[in-house]
Image (cartoon, rainbow over all chains, first blue to last red; front, side):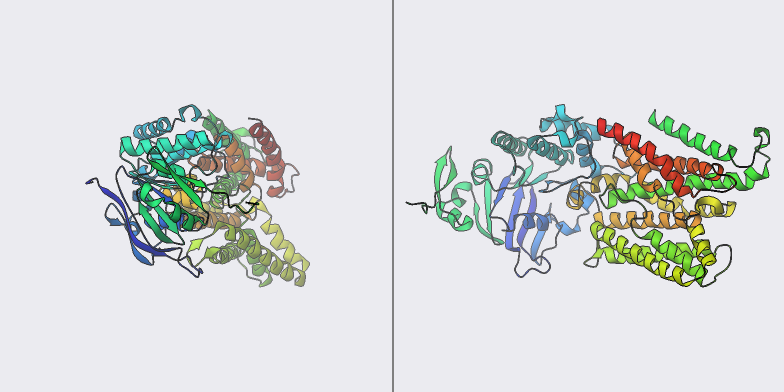
Length: 267
Length: 313
């Protein structure tokens, strides 16, 4: 456990302007290289806010957020982009773009103002395209891609940043089973083989349980439970947080959740 | 190949603007002719610079507000400039530079107002609010202009409008000098923003994650594009269409990456305006067409052709 501590957010609290309650009320998240943490919780539980505070996009009203031992807010966006790659929830480009062009934007923080792309930039792009298995798509327009291909391309752009921490915000929200599994396996492999630290925000409790080392369960801006999937994902906790009765059964060593029928329809 | 084509077109447009005119100047006398030296040459240079400035400003603003329909006058500058010019005439402010300076001042006031309204929560520039503020300020300036015009004598307001839509007829070596001193800084600021604008096109949060300082970038681009447009209005009045159609033509040829797009837009804008101005001053000689009409007449067919090609591929 002496791998380098990359992300260290401690007891951070945040309230959006005009809101009556804290979106985040004292949550911690710490990651070392090679660790894969999943952040789970209902809509509005503070998952995305936690990431924004941890990456210095929002300043916490309490607590501290540090990256590689330095306050998140003290990093310039440019320097931080060389350490943290993010696949955000939303993105919309009003102008059409090709796959290689968008992945090349991942090199933005490595490029100087006037100079063109260097050979190492193109190499980083090629590596990222390969790792995400999207080399054959390189010359396609983004709007011709399927949902799964598009998410892999966005992951490739984050990898082109050559980050040490990868943050994914609901990357499989609209994907079918195959593409979802491919993405989770890819991200797990990046953590195992390349030592990337991974924070994954998701609604997929079962996949988080099978792929992540650690799970952080949020509800109403608070950490309800944290730890190994088996420790966190008990039937009682999941029912309480998500407001629905569930059964938990182990599968290949990971707890798997089965939502129960409510029994209101005549039972 | 594309660059060579654009370069040849630009050079041809420039040469044509110097050689062709209502007064016949034999080619042999071109270098010694007074008409060429003191009228056509400065006018051709100014047309090229203003066209380039408008197209560059339009292309940058399209990226800033993330809307392909943006043009340099979307943000209320033409309304402010018009009000400035009309005010100068209504208040009988004289002198050769009175109208350009008044129009420039009007555009700057409009720019300041729009900028202030576009600031959300004290510091963040919201492009959507910027568009609305631009439309509102422009409409208000137009209303005040119309009020002044309807209360003043007909000949006076005719002067103001002739000037405002008069295009490049006031070109001289003085205005060329003003443009040459003033344009380089905002042009450089916009060209330097090329790669950050590529990133900003993805949206503000993704742009931050990729390492862009989004707020300073938006401020820089808005101010540089507006200052460039305000100066263009001051030396040549309101010339529509160049700032919308040229960026799109260049997008069709070069794609949407701003590093080639922005310089191409500058060259293309200069070419279109030099060409249009040549038509404007020769077609119905000895009278002149407003150059804005010609930019539309020349630009729309070219634009339509490019649009067909673009949507076909």
